[in-house]
Amino acid sequence: MDIVRYGLIGSGFVSTIHAESIARVKGAEVVAVASSTPEHAQAFAARHGIPRWYSPYARLLEQSDIDAVVIGVPNDLHEEIAVAALQSGKHAIVEKPLCVTLDQADRMIEAARTTKRLLLYAEELLFAPKYVRVKELVDDGALGDIYLVKQSEKHSGPHSPWFWDVTRSGGGAMMDMGCHGVEFARWILNRPKAASVTAHMGTYVHKGRTRGEDNSILVVEFEGGATALIEDSWAKPGGMEDVTEVYGSTGVAYADLLRGSSILTYSSTGYGYAVEKAETTRGWTFTMFEEMFNSGYPAEFQHFTQVIAQGVSPRVTAEDGRAVLEILFAGYEAAGAGRRVHLPFAPPAGKKPVDLWLERRSV
Image (tube, rainbow, N blue to C red):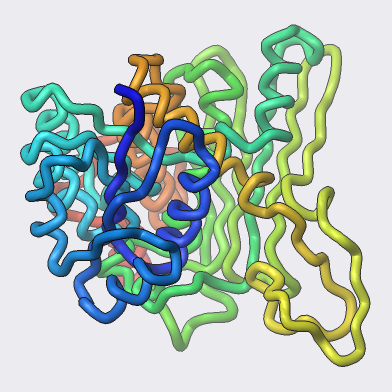
């Protein structure tokens, strides 16, 4: 395969990142985009120089020259679109989280198995240059035996309205961003099985916008003794932060994904360039530089392109996405019940992660 031809499903914020990232990848191109709103699809295609647009997405799946689709839509639609894409003969790349329930995850993985197509899980932290270097330090033995991985992502809230609707998103800050920290910790530790989970969460700033949590603390204990501490927030003003700390018997590593590469800026008037998740550009801000690169998106799609075209083993799989979702389910149960939850954990059928927390709070 000389070139991988992608179709994007979705025309929002993350699809913009996908389009711009793939444009940087050798051996890849975006040939089509689909959206539920024709006007959005047409405008997105024009803005990014994409030759074709479709609405609804089923028309895109009918196109025989598309090798893979990238699914950047609300969480509750992931299963439907991924299964349809796989059954149309296309590989499917799904933005995190993989889906909303473990039953959906199992059906998606089975669809990939039966169609012999790739189902890839888009976890960009595994491709972020600073975090990749931390992983190399760990694998080289520079830090000794790892006993604690801390990962934190915090900002003042997501871009799109559907995130705030737990019937679509499946949860709040932990569902949105905790999936990053969980998979990052699993990757750093070479993916041991999770043994137990404890968690605390609450809604402190956005009670009028969502029934989900806007701040969460998740503690995952793994077989072998290592622990992950994952903090996520939609309640922190002042722009995005994304940091990790990895502690071992002979060393420690700290990495600031975004602010360590930003430009410390003061402006009394504000400026036009949008600082990621910041409410204003007046006063002191951290002006992002090459945010997409630092977050790992171009490297992620370079890798996915190699997986599809050359048969390279994927760094992260749909099975990893399912493992992350199971840990998140256990976290919501732990926060609601106020106790440690042991894994494997089987949530009630049909329940979204946030349901386990909300139902306990109402008792």
